Image 1 (cartoon, rainbow, N blue to C red):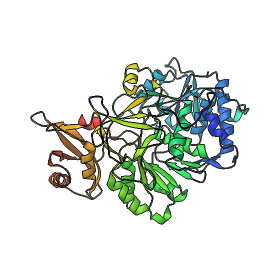
Image 2 (cartoon, rainbow, N blue to C red):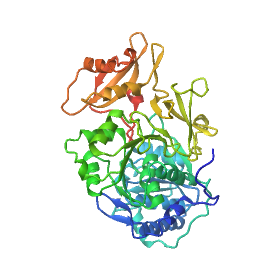
Image 3 (tube, rainbow, N blue to C red):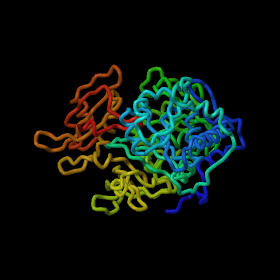
Length: 513
């Protein structure tokens, strides 16, 4: 399929994003929500080119990998963009992982350089020195770099001459590791052309982002979702991004929404549920939201309706992936149908394929597959999974969907989450959505469990709102009143929290275990 965005063969993604903002160098590009420190577009450009020159001075060659493990501060885009300017490949890494995870990714990527926030250094100290490929370590946001080079000091001393490697649109640009919600993380390789494709096709065409917008993304920059939300989309149009270094609490989020007055807020279903359950939540009049988005998991209809009723703004529920870089299926402003994931994003073709390999008719459950201009090149060092996921022009999502006659898609669970109860497929998400309509429930997840006869039946894990009390039989009856009788959960387990990835995706494989 042809990309909508016309990108020349000789193209550098960072150079493009920076050049778009040369006309307003004094405008704030990124604001640290904790310190209040802001980085203007002029300062961002200067520091990104300085970092590119730092890499050259340190002997970090083009096409080699640099692991970027940093908290969300204005230094993050400086390093990410500086790498791309120099032709070095940044490997954006989840800051919440363990030393074992970091070692796996450093070895797998053969990163020759590392930039890490000072607060995260303890997880790396024992690794440095015993990884043969890792030659350069820079520490950010600290005055005590000790044996390691200080990023801020290097930037202050660096050559400020703008210099950009003459890369191609189809050159390897950056990596993201998959979240590991279904197993080991995979290094997902993206090209220079992919960033601006997502900005034009979703950021502008669906979200309608403009230079006047102020944005805040609860999803961090190292996630595909957060990278587009907080870096690519605002930089593509000259908007301002608010960054929060820490993991967001409901108090943090509402603090940002009231103090900095973002017009666009990007969240995930779990966070929206928590925000709505916060007894200290502010009134609608205290916020300035124009539109909100949700991804990571399908948004329960009840949460979307409650949010819009309380805060006026719609939540555009959509689905994206590390492999596709950002959202390719989404609700649109003014056309939201809560309970669905919306319609195909312009520039992306979608199809639903059954177990027989044939395309499904409307109303039939099958696997969602995507054809679009931001599909990753491959999984690094993983040829077998690359061949399975990237099937020619089509990328397999691993998600089950149903499409209706109007072209709206409804999520029906992961391919490995679908349950066959009495010979009939049951979507765990449908049961979860039914549970979520109960006013006492904060979160719910449904998986398959074998009964005494070895037959698979639904089991629900439920998190209640603070101060609420329920019994399992009441919940079973609640579902029976809404769905076909065979779909109700045979077992209900009340838990304090659900296991999740850092993106907010429920790790159902842990619940099944």
